[in-house]
Image (cartoon, rainbow, N blue to C red; front, side, top):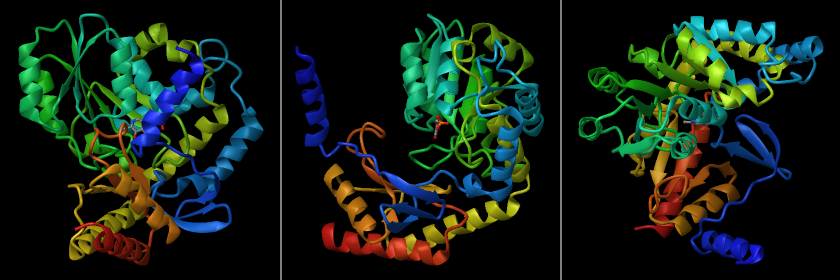
Length: 387
Ligand SMILES: *Cc1c(COP(=O)(O)O)cnc(C)c1O
């Protein structure tokens, strides 16, 4: 097959199914508002829940970090890229979340790749929730371990799978708050099962960290559970970029020996680590932001109910409206955009085929009026196009 034929075929596959993806060129993103060309939109698509990416103090510390450490780290952490500030951030995260140690990565994607591929070997078993993030699924495919996927948040399904396989060592993988569902894993119950079967547990808490629990410690703290491995990102509520694995001293030592993502990739920009330290300081004290976000979630669900919108069962800042088909999903996205609101049209392969949905992420900076307007528009669209 010729290269061009291959590419045309693959592109057409997406185009024909209304699954083709386009990227918006954003002019400026200032949290609640976003500018595309010269038009202003109310932003219901951001993961920067508290607007920390534009927080004045955090920006100031990023700048201060640049003045002090420059704009690049110069090499991997194994050569000269591991600075005092990286070490300080690792310590501070470990203290905050009650772990012996933590390890920094350049992104959540990279962290998940590394965690799975470094720990899981041929003959091992990964038991993963059906709806976990693509980065974890991909890493599991690439690792030579056996991947078994249990039904979403279904303890019986998990137990059944664990009991069916004789395993050398196994890892149960789930998310604190599911990024495309908005619901939470029954972490406490999964941890118990994990203990019963001598398995370890990995929780990806990208959307829970900073947002829930005392001092924003996230889903695990809220459920009073300490998984052996906890992955958090700095790209959502923390408002910057990067990620960390929280773990024991021994696991950290093992990663320093064997993680290719750490050994062969340039370490986090020191100024970025400096800014993350500042952001974590703020997030611990962000009870007012957490309360405002919670109030917005409550309000969103209350008004949606009033208008009879079919919501998925989520109590988090991630809210979803299932849409009949991919075509309609794009239509509603365009309709809302024309009316000044930016939401996400989520389709396959981000979610299982045939389950498109509108994804609405609430921010602490949204007003009740923003929320009410959005819901009214969705209601109007449904009235005209569905039923
Ligand atoms: C966003 C996200 C990631 C990836 O994190 P990045 O820092 O954006 O690479 C991983 N897991 C989940 C559940 C996420 O939502």
